[in-house]
Amino acid sequence: MKDIYIYPPYPPLDREMIRNPYVENLSEGLLHYFNVLTYRRFVEVSIIDLCKSVFKMDIILFNWIEDLGYRNKGGAQFLVFILTFIVMKIRRVKIIWFYHNIHPHLGESFISKLIKRILFKYSDLIIVHSTLAYDYCDKRTKSKLVNLIHPNSDINTRNLLHKKSNYDIFIWGTIEPYKGIVPFLEFLKDKEIMYKIKVIGSCSNKEYFNKLKSYETNLISIENRCPSFEEIEDYINMSDFIVFPYISNAFSSSGALFDTLAFKGNVIGPNKGVFSDLSKMDLCFVFDTYEDIITHIHNKKIIDNNLIMEFVNTNTWEGFCKSVYGNIIHLYRC
Image (tube, rainbow, N blue to C red; front, side, top):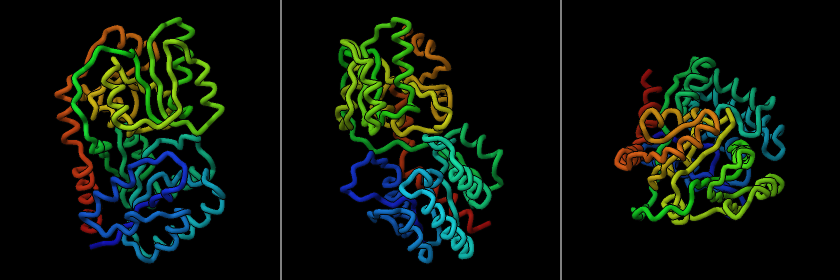
């Protein structure tokens, strides 16, 4: 059984941060096929742990490594990455890059551009989660490229009967500028469109949240906290539409989208990335302009729940990790 290192490993449990379950789910799924060196390994500085483990691994899986320059002492961490990467290449470690976003959410930097250039050239396999990301990478690499749709998390749903609608729109997930909540609320304000809206999610940027909070009215409620899945399910069940008003060209996929589908949410998202892909499967509605969102809400169309559940039940982490394993093993047979 080959030794695999999944970057980044788990952050310390006592660190205050918004935790993305992607790496944990990936680690648990790949335990069936590999010795996962980073499984349940909690580390302070991911790049130092990677360096210490470079002589133990046969395979490295990179996630969000292009964001390294935005970490504490990013320049120094980048130098450690370069030295570690050279050792990986000398040792013929298989390099797998999960390309989550077209660009880092904080924008491109000299370091992010250089890391991407290195990985486009030297990765053995690049895995993306949307047609948009595939087309973007295909123009920049000769590495093996695979598009695997982001899997649905195994969420225990309560199959609630739809109640009387309490909200026209529900917006949830981490609150960040690239998600376009402020310009969307500004658009509604300018157009004097009155919807009952619930916004809930964790926001680490106090200044940005205060700006967002200024749009709160007797119809618009905004909370800065991380809700439980039960709360999210309740709000989705009480809302006509779950809107993702993203305006950024940086993103490719969205974990919150797949969690929303697990709760049978009626989704409206931008006509790009994974939203565009899923709209072609009749699993969500898409918009090119904010006026399109208003049209969808006015039409009050509903996504077929049977279609959603068929997708959710087949698009699992188990199946995803099996596909990842198959593509990695294929590298050894070439």
